[in-house]
Image (tube, rainbow, N blue to C red; front, top):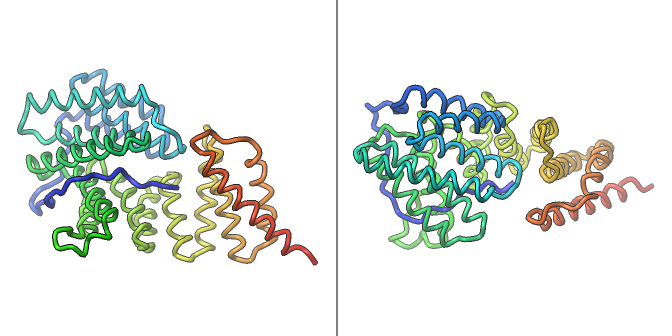
Length: 348
């Protein structure tokens, strides 16, 4: 599963939470409560219910960008979860409304950091969509604007810890993408700084705690720091044990960290979460079953591997959507190769 975030393309100064400050809850208490409810439902993969909560926020407070921003976030989470494309018109409409409401709020209250935080989030979500659509120039432009908005939010109010999730992600992945240039004196390596900001949001964030954890799991896996990836994923799964995104991260870290037995258990948990969902996700089920099969073979458990192969082959028969066809073809090729190995092993 590829969970890499969009790449922001500006250089920001570090914005750290002051020791004497406390993270800021949203100024509207009812909206704050509804945001927490919708985020909880999103992490439980109850997407329709989460969208209803955020839509209610937008209906009751039509001039507040929060409802539009968070409903767009649900759509983005669904895209990641189900390996889909951003639903164009619906998503774009929410982003346009979120931007417009945030910009109006900035004009009305230029000293408040909240509308800048929401504008940055909307721009970041839009950057994700444009990158998925293949418009990398527009994605980079939006990413630059998103980063600038997060910077402004923190300049205005250092207690807006949730902005650190976007900024920490930016610091890490910007450096990662230009890592080959970091030997130059004017190209700093800010990966550790990005991780530090994400960990601050993980522990002190109000609305983006789990978004920061999701970024951290992906970053630690990229950095081959599998122990920390397992620790963060396990921390998140203690609250949301069926969350498929964190289960992917955990299983990936255990597999890459050379723990096939534990990885197999994690992939089995993930498979249960995928197959128990009311919505079919055949491609992810196929990949997950392949991972379990691979772990069984690594453990030399050929008998169970043969049984597992029987559960995979029916998933390969029907064509996959066009955007998944190439990846599915490669996955099926790996399955056929493992099938040949198993058959060879079983010959007298």
